[in-house]
Image (cartoon, rainbow over all chains, first blue to last red; front, side, top):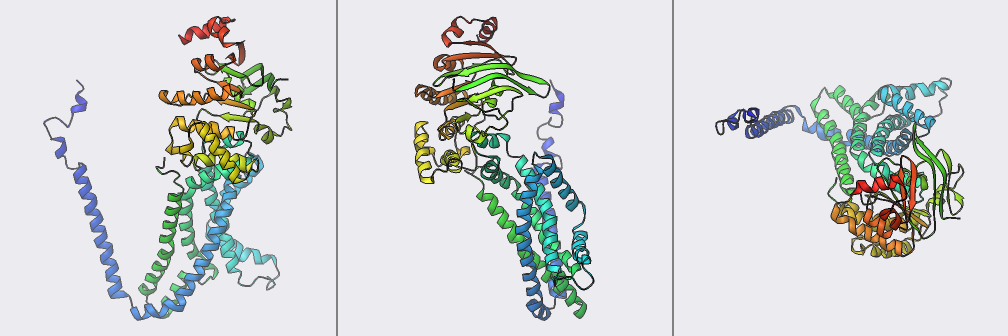
Length: 277
Length: 242
């Protein structure tokens, strides 16, 4: 009989006693996780007790960091809203059967995904005012419009790809059923395909929006007083690195962790009839 | 004038000639059953009837109006043609009732309350009144297909197209769907049915149309077709069934 089947299992229980079986793997995993937790926890504890200056911590929270945080939050809210909205249209362009529309959407995605956000921000920040004679550019505080425009254009490309993937994953029969009932392409997209594509794309869109939050750190280069700038101000005057670093970390996590929760909530809400397939 | 007319229809998928000069007239109130081996073009013919597929030559008319013409108002014409698919294609993000009310409210502009009352009537008719708030994935295949029939009926179509609607069902669920179709036929609905269910074809069909290699090869009443087919192709097809 097939001897290869019984190899390593002959002589009752011999196979079970090999080093890396299910049980030892589980224990090994827990051990590594435990060591990791101890290491990181110890490191953070060491920083907090030896490096952080609590007086300075309280002093710089307000107004420095609170202002930077609120500014960043406002930019994120507007950027998120615009990039997701624009991204839906980019995604629709990517699935268009019209060659021209499709080509434009594809070129858009290639460009904005293919060049760094920092480069795009610089193009907008210093490139656009160059069309006016020196000193004549009419918009003051151009860094804020730049931030919104840059984040929106860049992330619309990523959201667009997520939406395209989401639409592609909706079975063709869905649009056919909608059309067979007399609905137009637009109605079929809006009522039938996009709600399902949205669910399919949610995880990827959420992922991208978390990256958008972190991308606001690049705005320090175009003189937006955001969290990294706040860190550099404090650090250059007090020479204390860890106190502002901890604040920066807390500030970002205060945005990204709830964002993840919102995405999970939205996913659960579109689990129609439960028992997601 | 027949209700639905296929006039010398030719259809190609790339190089493949899938419908060859098909002529077929479906009369009002008639149940026309299309049978034939797989790949014979029967589903394609059905899908051309509401222009889910474009034809390359010939014309298809509904109540005298061209469906296949370049400038046909296809969204309006499709309201008169109900279609039920092999894979149900219910909208998974909507309840059974919402599946039925969606098109009447969005396309015909029916008020929500009126559409819901009508939906409940139709769901009652297919025996699913109690499931009106269920989502498709909470229903069995047979129940889903009956909702799909109710959804198509909600647009008050003049003709119903059934594309192998029991082929994806577990054998014990086939009967409940065929029963609904049987009732529909008795109420006088014009139906064009592609099926492999020979018992249903024989019992409910007014006409049996046998397709092979993209052509209509026999068109006979069921008693003739199943007892004594007129063509060799018909005889050959029947012999393979047994």
